[in-house]
Image 1 (cartoon, rainbow over the protein chains, first blue to last red):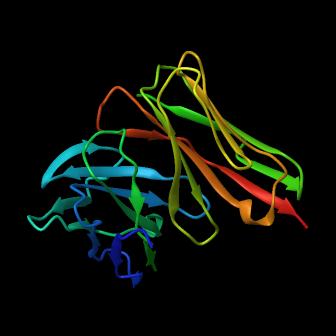
Image 2: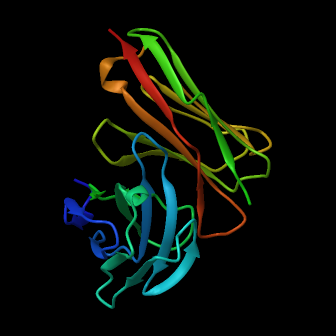
Image 3: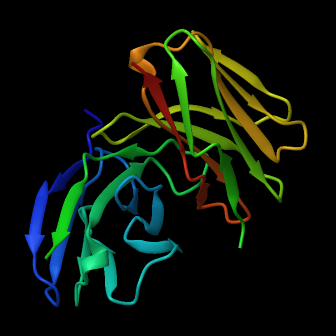
Length: 114
Length: 111
Protein backbone atom coordinates (compact mmCIF):
# COMPACT_ATOMS: atom_id res chain seq x y z
CA UNK A 1 0.00 0.00 0.00
CA UNK A 2 1.57 3.26 -1.20
CA UNK A 3 -0.58 5.49 0.99
CA UNK A 4 -2.09 7.20 -2.06
CA UNK A 5 -5.82 6.64 -2.48
CA UNK A 6 -7.89 7.06 -5.61
CA UNK A 7 -11.64 6.94 -6.08
CA UNK A 8 -13.53 5.51 -7.74
CA UNK A 9 -11.72 2.32 -8.67
CA UNK A 10 -13.82 1.82 -11.78
CA UNK A 11 -15.95 4.21 -13.77
CA UNK A 12 -18.15 3.41 -16.75
CA UNK A 13 -19.78 6.24 -18.62
CA UNK A 14 -20.95 7.30 -22.05
CA UNK A 15 -19.41 9.49 -24.72
CA UNK A 16 -20.03 13.18 -24.19
CA UNK A 17 -20.25 12.86 -20.42
CA UNK A 18 -18.13 14.46 -17.71
CA UNK A 19 -16.44 12.64 -14.82
CA UNK A 20 -14.32 13.56 -11.83
CA UNK A 21 -11.52 11.40 -10.50
CA UNK A 22 -10.28 11.97 -6.98
CA UNK A 23 -6.87 11.46 -5.40
CA UNK A 24 -5.62 11.77 -1.84
CA UNK A 25 -1.84 11.94 -1.59
CA UNK A 26 0.31 10.30 1.06
CA UNK A 27 0.26 12.13 4.36
CA UNK A 28 2.70 15.02 4.16
CA UNK A 29 3.23 14.92 0.40
CA UNK A 30 2.74 18.27 -1.29
CA UNK A 31 3.02 17.27 -4.94
CA UNK A 32 0.38 15.41 -6.91
CA UNK A 33 0.82 14.08 -10.43
CA UNK A 34 -1.76 12.69 -12.85
CA UNK A 35 -0.96 10.09 -15.49
CA UNK A 36 -2.95 8.34 -18.20
CA UNK A 37 -2.15 4.77 -19.21
CA UNK A 38 -4.01 3.32 -22.17
CA UNK A 39 -4.18 -0.46 -22.56
CA UNK A 40 -0.69 -1.95 -22.55
CA UNK A 41 0.83 1.46 -23.15
CA UNK A 42 3.26 3.64 -21.28
CA UNK A 43 2.54 6.35 -18.76
CA UNK A 44 1.49 9.68 -20.24
CA UNK A 45 2.16 12.52 -17.82
CA UNK A 46 -0.79 14.88 -17.68
CA UNK A 47 -0.20 17.48 -14.99
CA UNK A 48 1.52 18.21 -11.68
CA UNK A 49 0.38 20.31 -8.74
CA UNK A 50 2.46 21.43 -5.81
CA UNK A 51 0.81 22.79 -2.69
CA UNK A 52 -2.23 23.93 -4.63
CA UNK A 53 -0.46 25.43 -7.62
CA UNK A 54 0.05 23.99 -11.09
CA UNK A 55 3.76 23.20 -11.59
CA UNK A 56 4.11 21.27 -14.81
CA UNK A 57 1.90 20.36 -17.70
CA UNK A 58 2.27 17.40 -20.01
CA UNK A 59 0.06 16.08 -22.77
CA UNK A 60 -3.19 17.12 -21.15
CA UNK A 61 -6.13 17.75 -23.45
CA UNK A 62 -8.11 20.97 -23.19
CA UNK A 63 -11.14 18.86 -22.26
CA UNK A 64 -9.29 17.78 -19.14
CA UNK A 65 -8.60 19.93 -16.11
CA UNK A 66 -7.32 19.38 -12.61
CA UNK A 67 -6.96 21.17 -9.32
CA UNK A 68 -5.42 20.62 -5.93
CA UNK A 69 -7.36 21.74 -2.90
CA UNK A 70 -6.13 23.28 0.39
CA UNK A 71 -6.26 19.86 2.07
CA UNK A 72 -3.94 18.69 -0.77
CA UNK A 73 -6.33 16.23 -2.34
CA UNK A 74 -6.65 16.57 -6.09
CA UNK A 75 -9.33 16.07 -8.67
CA UNK A 76 -9.02 15.38 -12.38
CA UNK A 77 -12.01 16.46 -14.43
CA UNK A 78 -12.59 14.88 -17.82
CA UNK A 79 -15.32 16.35 -20.01
CA UNK A 80 -16.89 15.68 -23.42
CA UNK A 81 -15.60 12.16 -23.09
CA UNK A 82 -14.59 10.19 -26.18
CA UNK A 83 -14.03 6.48 -26.66
CA UNK A 84 -10.29 7.11 -26.79
CA UNK A 85 -10.32 8.48 -23.25
CA UNK A 86 -10.86 4.97 -21.93
CA UNK A 87 -7.75 4.26 -19.89
CA UNK A 88 -6.28 3.75 -16.47
CA UNK A 89 -5.69 7.05 -14.70
CA UNK A 90 -3.03 7.10 -12.02
CA UNK A 91 -2.39 9.67 -9.39
CA UNK A 92 1.03 9.84 -7.74
CA UNK A 93 2.38 11.96 -4.94
CA UNK A 94 5.80 13.01 -3.76
CA UNK A 95 7.17 14.90 -0.81
CA UNK A 96 8.27 17.94 -2.74
CA UNK A 97 8.10 19.46 -6.19
CA UNK A 98 11.44 18.54 -7.68
CA UNK A 99 12.15 15.65 -10.01
CA UNK A 100 14.54 14.07 -7.51
CA UNK A 101 11.65 12.91 -5.41
CA UNK A 102 10.36 9.36 -5.52
CA UNK A 103 6.77 9.20 -6.71
CA UNK A 104 4.24 7.02 -4.92
CA UNK A 105 1.43 5.81 -7.15
CA UNK A 106 -2.16 5.11 -6.23
CA UNK A 107 -4.02 2.02 -7.45
CA UNK A 108 -5.58 3.92 -10.35
CA UNK A 109 -9.06 4.59 -11.67
CA UNK A 110 -10.10 2.55 -14.68
CA UNK A 111 -12.32 4.65 -16.93
CA UNK A 112 -14.40 3.00 -19.60
CA UNK A 113 -16.21 5.22 -22.09
CA UNK A 114 -18.96 3.46 -24.05
CA UNK B 1 10.70 18.48 -26.41
CA UNK B 2 12.90 16.18 -24.42
CA UNK B 3 12.38 12.48 -24.87
CA UNK B 4 13.66 9.34 -23.23
CA UNK B 5 13.72 6.35 -25.56
CA UNK B 6 13.44 2.95 -23.91
CA UNK B 7 14.14 -0.34 -25.64
CA UNK B 8 13.12 -3.02 -26.19
CA UNK B 9 9.35 -2.67 -25.93
CA UNK B 10 9.01 -6.35 -25.01
CA UNK B 11 11.47 -9.04 -24.01
CA UNK B 12 10.59 -12.71 -23.78
CA UNK B 13 13.00 -14.77 -21.71
CA UNK B 14 13.14 -18.26 -20.26
CA UNK B 15 13.16 -18.32 -16.49
CA UNK B 16 16.78 -18.17 -15.41
CA UNK B 17 17.93 -16.09 -18.38
CA UNK B 18 19.09 -12.51 -18.03
CA UNK B 19 17.11 -9.41 -18.98
CA UNK B 20 18.25 -5.91 -19.87
CA UNK B 21 16.37 -2.72 -20.70
CA UNK B 22 17.99 0.47 -21.94
CA UNK B 23 17.03 4.13 -21.78
CA UNK B 24 18.57 6.86 -23.93
CA UNK B 25 18.15 10.59 -23.95
CA UNK B 26 19.47 13.09 -26.50
CA UNK B 27 20.12 15.56 -23.69
CA UNK B 28 21.79 15.29 -20.31
CA UNK B 29 19.58 14.10 -17.51
CA UNK B 30 19.85 15.38 -13.96
CA UNK B 31 18.89 12.00 -12.55
CA UNK B 32 17.12 8.83 -13.53
CA UNK B 33 14.55 6.78 -11.67
CA UNK B 34 13.38 3.23 -12.33
CA UNK B 35 9.92 1.90 -11.61
CA UNK B 36 8.33 -1.53 -11.90
CA UNK B 37 4.68 -2.15 -12.70
CA UNK B 38 3.39 -5.67 -12.07
CA UNK B 39 0.52 -6.87 -14.26
CA UNK B 40 -2.68 -5.26 -13.01
CA UNK B 41 -0.75 -3.09 -10.57
CA UNK B 42 0.64 0.39 -10.29
CA UNK B 43 4.21 1.59 -10.82
CA UNK B 44 6.46 1.16 -7.82
CA UNK B 45 9.73 3.04 -7.35
CA UNK B 46 12.84 0.86 -7.50
CA UNK B 47 15.82 3.21 -7.40
CA UNK B 48 17.26 6.59 -8.32
CA UNK B 49 20.66 7.29 -9.88
CA UNK B 50 22.13 10.78 -9.77
CA UNK B 51 25.89 10.64 -10.36
CA UNK B 52 27.70 10.19 -13.66
CA UNK B 53 28.75 6.54 -14.08
CA UNK B 54 26.81 5.45 -11.02
CA UNK B 55 26.11 1.74 -10.56
CA UNK B 56 23.72 0.41 -7.95
CA UNK B 57 22.69 -3.15 -7.17
CA UNK B 58 19.61 -4.59 -5.56
CA UNK B 59 20.06 -8.36 -5.25
CA UNK B 60 19.79 -9.61 -8.87
CA UNK B 61 19.09 -6.14 -10.30
CA UNK B 62 21.91 -3.87 -11.50
CA UNK B 63 21.24 -0.27 -12.46
CA UNK B 64 23.70 1.92 -14.36
CA UNK B 65 23.79 5.61 -15.25
CA UNK B 66 26.04 6.53 -18.14
CA UNK B 67 29.11 8.71 -17.87
CA UNK B 68 27.45 11.44 -19.93
CA UNK B 69 24.22 11.07 -17.95
CA UNK B 70 22.33 10.46 -21.18
CA UNK B 71 21.68 6.76 -20.84
CA UNK B 72 20.82 4.16 -18.25
CA UNK B 73 20.24 0.46 -18.07
CA UNK B 74 18.62 -2.10 -15.81
CA UNK B 75 19.96 -5.64 -15.88
CA UNK B 76 18.31 -8.56 -14.14
CA UNK B 77 20.38 -11.69 -13.64
CA UNK B 78 18.70 -15.10 -13.69
CA UNK B 79 15.11 -13.92 -14.03
CA UNK B 80 12.39 -15.37 -11.84
CA UNK B 81 8.62 -15.36 -12.28
CA UNK B 82 8.39 -12.60 -9.69
CA UNK B 83 10.30 -10.32 -12.08
CA UNK B 84 7.43 -10.28 -14.58
CA UNK B 85 6.09 -6.81 -15.28
CA UNK B 86 6.86 -3.59 -17.07
CA UNK B 87 9.97 -1.62 -16.17
CA UNK B 88 9.94 2.13 -16.71
CA UNK B 89 12.77 4.61 -16.58
CA UNK B 90 12.08 8.26 -15.89
CA UNK B 91 14.69 10.98 -16.31
CA UNK B 92 14.94 14.44 -14.84
CA UNK B 93 15.02 16.94 -17.67
CA UNK B 94 15.41 20.68 -18.13
CA UNK B 95 12.55 21.44 -15.83
CA UNK B 96 13.26 20.82 -12.19
CA UNK B 97 9.75 19.58 -11.67
CA UNK B 98 9.14 17.05 -14.37
CA UNK B 99 10.27 13.51 -15.03
CA UNK B 100 10.42 12.36 -18.65
CA UNK B 101 9.15 8.82 -18.84
CA UNK B 102 10.34 6.06 -21.11
CA UNK B 103 7.71 3.89 -22.81
CA UNK B 104 8.56 0.88 -20.66
CA UNK B 105 9.90 -2.60 -21.33
CA UNK B 106 7.61 -5.52 -20.65
CA UNK B 107 9.38 -8.58 -19.29
CA UNK B 108 7.60 -11.80 -20.20
CA UNK B 109 8.72 -15.18 -18.92
CA UNK B 110 8.20 -17.94 -21.47
CA UNK B 111 6.33 -20.96 -20.09
